[in-house]
Length: 298
Image (cartoon, rainbow, N blue to C red):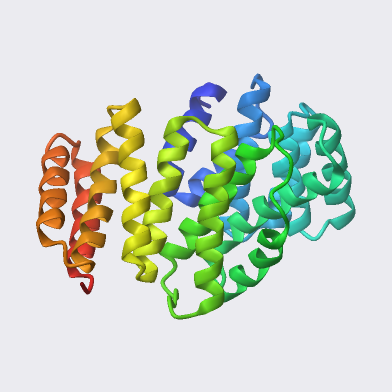
């Protein structure tokens, strides 16, 4: 067997290439020594993503999480274990782990529970109808922004993932008001949380998510404001050519809808120039995004 740390890094990088093989590797790693608390936390998240989310095996994911809990109790591990317990039908264990998470992080039990609910929803969003995700997200977003805590980044990251899953969902209906509201409010709440907890890159990418949402929902003016805010962060702190190129695509789309044709073409050209330096895989991703935006109605 490959050295555990190297094996974990490999699985983090390419688990989507062969999910059954990745799941088997995760089962081996759950018993492997030595792994640091940080590595065990990453392993716990990956178990949920592969075994629980992608394969639908939440009871199996919970069984693996229990092995990790016997070796460490880092907050990220406790959070992932609580998710697996809850989605695996072990509600009493999930509540106990939420209490341990609250104690470990020095936050209220209510906030720890909210963190786990957001974390759970990010694993479900891609595999269930968008309306179902929106209905689950609505009461969480209706709650006021919690006091600043060490869980802000976890909440923001989960919201990023939930909104991104909605955007990518093949059944997304932009005309569904509940779904549209969930995406818009989710992206805005993620931005507010990153303002407290993130780096300038986190804040810039939160603006990109807002631009994606607003363009998808047809609010070109809001999309342009978000894209320009992200580009301003790069101008002040960069360079960050990859993010800049993708933000420019969103700017181009918004400007085209606003009939600002000259600005749209300038943004397209600048994005294309930046993309010339991308590696082949990233360039392919950029080209797919550019083609999709070019085909979108003005």
